[in-house]
Image (cartoon, rainbow, N blue to C red; front, side, top):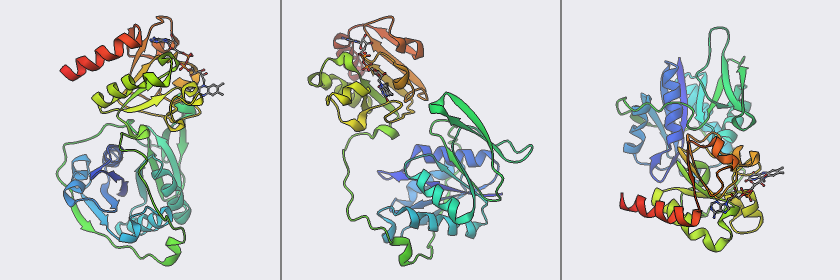
Length: 316
Ligand code: FAD
C-alpha cells in the first residue's frame, strides 16, 4: 500500500504536526512517501525519514512559493498518481484542510479531518474523528477508493527512530489555470510564536485587571517559548487583539502545555483548550471551575505567582 503524506514546513524545519502525520501513515504499515512544497533545505526534509517516510518528493517551483491552494492540490494529485497512492495523509491545519478539500474534489476521494486514531480496516475503512471541540468522537466509514486523512495535532505518537529519508525533486505539470488566484503580497503578522501552532500557550483572563498588566504574561510566555492567548472578554474589551481569543468562538489550541492565568474556566473557554496535553491554572479563587479541568493548579494571586514562576524558570 502506497501512502503519500503532505508535509508542511516553517522556519526551515518540517512542522511537528506533519511529522506526526508521517508517523500515522507509517503505523498503517504502508510504503510512505512524503511531499514538501517550497524552499527548505534537503537535510531538513530528510528528518521525515525518522518519522517513517522512505522518500521525500521536493517541489521547488518558484511559482508555488506563495502557497496557491489549487496549485498545491494539483501537485499533490499528480504526486499521488506518480507513486500509485490511494491514500493521502496530512496534518489538520489551516493549509491542510483546504488543500485536502481540493484534492478530494479532484480525485473523488473521501476526506475526513480531525482524525485521532488509526483506521479500523476489519470491515471497510473506518476512522475515528474528534467532534464538538473534542467532547465527542465520530466513527466514519470512508467508502471511496481514494482516501484523504487529516490528522489532529498531538493525537498520534511521533515516531523518531527511522533512518533519514532520501530526497527527490518532483516537478508537476502546472498551467496558468492553476494560478488564476494571485497572492500579491504576504506579510508576517508577528515574529512571535503563532497561537494555533504553539506547543506552549500562556493565556490571561479578566483576572489580569487590565492591558497594562500583560507584561508579566508576555514575559512568562517568552521565557517558556510560548504563544500568548486570552479569554473572550479580554479581547472584547480591547485589552488584547482578537486573534489571541481562545475558546469556542475563538482559536482552538492543542499545545503540550496551556497556562491559564486569571481565567475562570467557563465552558466556552474550555471548548478551545480541552485538547491540551497539560493544563496549569493560576487563579486566586480555589473554587474557580478551571481547576477541575487542570492537571496542575496554583491557588494564588497572579500578580505574585506569575513573576515568581518566571524568575524561577529563568533561574532553572
Ligand atoms: P471572569 O469570568 O471574570 O474570570 C476571571 C477569573 O480571574 C476569576 O476566576 C477570578 O477568580 C480570577 N482572578 C481575579 N483576580 C485574580 C488574581 N489577582 N489572580 C488570579 N486570579 C484572579 N469565553 C472565552 O474565553 N472564549 C470563547 O470562545 C467564548 N465564547 C463564548 C460564546 C458564547 C456564545 C458565550 C455566551 C460566551 C462565550 N465566552 C467565551 C465567555 C465565557 O462564558 C466567559 O464569560 C469568559 O470566558 C470569562 O472570561 P474570564 O475567565 O477571563 O473572566
